[in-house]
Amino acid sequence: MTFRIETQRLILRELRLSDLEGMFELDSNPEVHKYLGNKPIKTKEESLKILEDVINQYTKHGIGRWALINKETQEFMGWSGLKLNTEGHMNGFTEFYDVGYRLIKRFWGKGYATESGKAAVDYAFRVLKLPELYGITEMGNQASHKALLKLGLKYVEDFYYEKEKLKLRWYKIENKELCKNNV
Ligand SMILES: CC(C)(COP(=O)(O)OP(=O)(O)OC[C@H]1O[C@@H](n2cnc3c(N)ncnc32)[C@H](O)[C@@H]1OP(=O)(O)O)[C@@H](O)C(=O)NCCC(=O)NCCS
Image 1 (tube, rainbow, N blue to C red):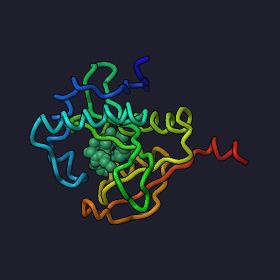
Image 2: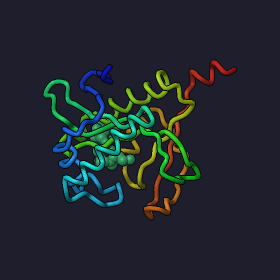
Image 3: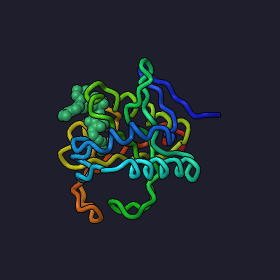
Image 4: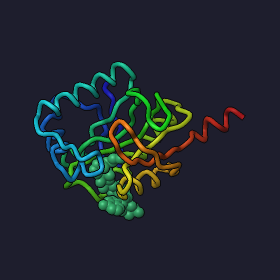
């Protein structure tokens, strides 16, 4: 069955190669990448690689970020959701799930990160039954900081990410249902 979650204003579904145009609009904008290491992409080939990577994650890990579709207009607005990170050390972790989001600029400030993020946290705890979930932002990314707090994550600490030479912040939320059952 094809994966699909609906929230009040959004459809969350798996990313597809046909999302290429939208992904290019998203990642070629320097403003979108201001707190993502300042490396906007330049070509559609790069977007294609990103899409292929996420699609591989669906197969390999059963999870990956989801496309964010406007229910009313059917527009592609960016992505949101969960990822199993396995690409090396981050704040002492080698394998962890995080919640994240990235929206095309014209869709910022309408609560979509919060709305989609809530669905992702819910999915992480009720469907995947993860014991905990993490969030990461670059220092100064107030929008992302606020969105993570609104999802119920707690700020834990700042850390230096050597690989990208970035100052990042680390957030965490625990699965309360799972904790209760384990008592
Ligand atoms: C971060 C991002 C996803 C937020 O998306 P969004 O849909 O605009 O966020 P929301 O509307 O759900 O807002 C969440 C909170 O942040 C606040 N906020 C939004 N933009 C803000 C800004 N530029 N500065 C300060 N606060 C901001 C909102 O007001 C809201 O808080 P409130 O309810 O207390 O008012 C979006 O700005 C984005 O795509 N940025 C570029 C990519 C990126 O940085 N991704 C996160 C990487 S960790």
